[in-house]
Image 1: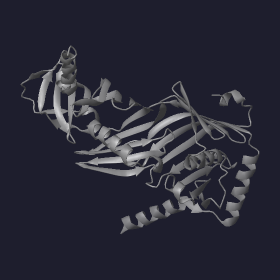
Image 2: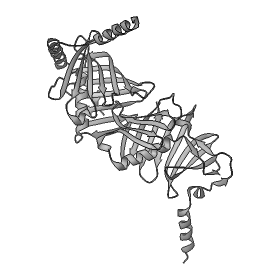
Image 3: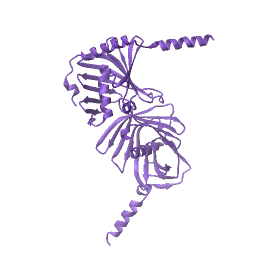
Image 4: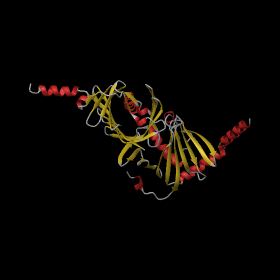
Length: 201
Length: 205
């Protein structure tokens, strides 16, 4: 009986949403949209050295992102020698696999990459709710029916948190930002041991 | 009308810029490349790599150094814009990714096994195997260019063709790997030195 209050407390915490867990304060704001500017320039080729840690294995290569039109991005991953591993397009709501190496042509792999990259390149999002924390503003949005939180500090987008069933699922962390280019990006999965580190080259 | 004449004239020049070799010329080139390859114990060379993708504004450039020791030790070492090296040794890739070392066993992966074998052979230019490739020979601006199209369907879905340019001595000066999409990786070799002593330590991991 003594443990019941603690158990209830733990249960309440487990059921709490991402803002509740992190003590974000809900605020009223006039801004209706939030922007991810990091892949928004059609003139620019976004080229990153990518290091992928999956459980105890590591992979590396070159990740290329290009905006080709409004709501149209192409994302290609190659080896250092230039051999294409996968090549995807996001066009409006459509997702197109232009090419993928037979060895990794698996539904689970493609779905995981699709969700990560959809979030990474989504540019203008409608804001559902706004919060503040000690560090800055947090905008709640939705991509592919998943709730996302956009953390903005001093006007810069620093982090996107993708959630599933109210829990933190993937964090996208942007750093070394210069002229709307994030030189370093980390895509960190919280439910599987997967971390993708991108460094602009 | 005069514009049309100019256009046709330029088109003729463009066609002439790359012309197919006669059988005798092709055989002579093949013999020369094989003789050069057989006499090659070591190669060191700088390289500059251009990854071309049609949708990009610019090719992605990288550069580094290649070391080769007969019969099949190869080290590709990228220095810019990242530090990355890969040593092909037997059926293992030894990778040094900015100081982080790892091994990849490619023994079970047919595709990578083929790729490594072809890259090793393409450094010497010795891909003249008609069982594996459809081969076309061209002369272009005084140099020889040979197109090797893999016959293996699985491999061809990865790399459609290797285009190799040879200088007058039968040495490789450029390798272009074309993908089915027509995007390609072009590697240009400069400052190539052959048969200089190359210690095994270069290939140590």
